[in-house]
Length: 92
Image 1 (tube, one colour):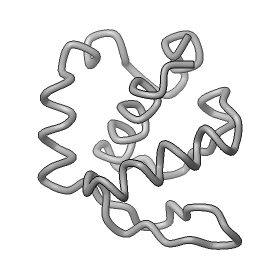
Image 2 (image 1 turned 30 degrees about the vertical axis):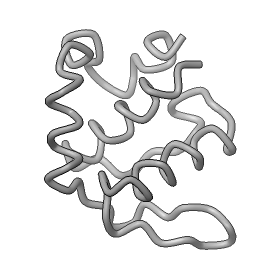
Image 3 (image 1 turned 90 degrees about the horizontal axis):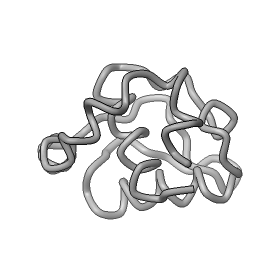
């Protein structure tokens, strides 16, 4: 599993207004998913992440300007990454 791609996929979904996803949608473990969300939050790419029962909560996350720039900088992935439905194969 490629951590950078997972981070990108999570940020991309949030940028498109989709927050109804979990590690199951990405085919990764809770630890991998939580680590990616926590990284994006800690590095200032996302705001609005709360912690519930020791897990990040995605009820109202927002992409920051820094997060938007992150997506632009990794724009080459945008062509390969279309939707969360295809993400499992893309993360390999």
